[in-house]
Length: 251
Image (cartoon, rainbow, N blue to C red; front, side, top):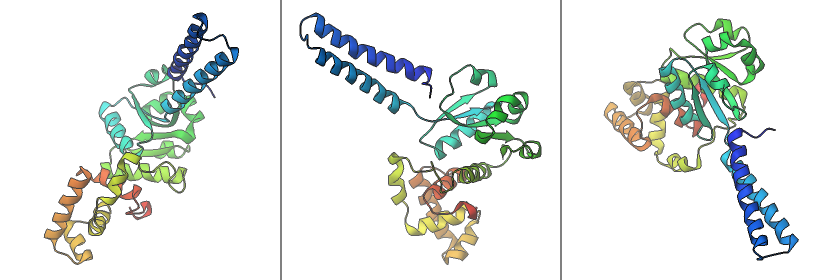
């Protein structure tokens, strides 16, 4: 395993700082005991390594020459995978010029994959090709794809299905600790309404299925949006799947 450049710099700075402190104590007569120096050096290494481990998060690389596509994907992925750093690149050259040892998935424009087949064929299991419409040329060669021309909810569904197929049981789709309170915000009726919303039912259909009035459905929808601080059906879908309100197979 190779340390990323930035992590290695942090490691060296902390280690050298504590090691120099132990030398300072020895030179000025605070301690001549070699055991104390050894303990100090061991502590310096442990402290530096601990900081490095805490500072290292898996990365998701979004490589797209279309700025709007890049921004939209970054926003959606940040909501879906809060445990990862999402890093955007506007070209393969930009990406290739930086350290990417921590990248676990690549979301890449079709044109960039086409122009750099050697790299992405070697990383096919970690590459998701962002297409615009027809995905046949890439799916036939084994690449997983998402269609950037779809609605936000359709893109979310595609990413969720890809993640579920690659990580049975939803590995990695755990709720960030800072968001756990959100799981208890919705009442059972609001959860019922949300489940039908993300499945695509309109207000009247939701009302008929839950045996309530359309006005009550609108009231619940308003409460859901306020509690979760979003009206985006894509983000509501992410919340519903992650918190077990709907199964991805039902979408």
